[in-house]
Image (cartoon, rainbow, N blue to C red; front, side):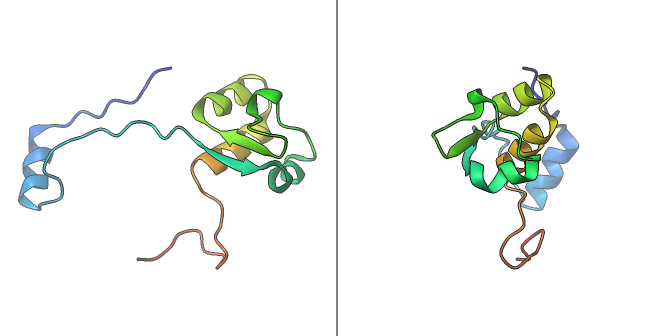
Length: 102
């Protein structure tokens, strides 16, 4: 799988040092994923089951880049989208906000 590589130019580095935004560039590892409940998401995928390779247990599925890519590759579009939402933690919170204000 190809990864996006950010080109960190000298002007950006200089500005970030002046503004004390960051001291050094350290690229974090890609988030491996999280578990989510099948019962929450299967009704949103038109009652279609998630592929077996997504199963983490009898009642949970695992949202990971590998599973997301595989679902889309297998034309499991709604399942892939649900995994993307779970992986990115993009579900709405209990206050019905899309983002939390700091």
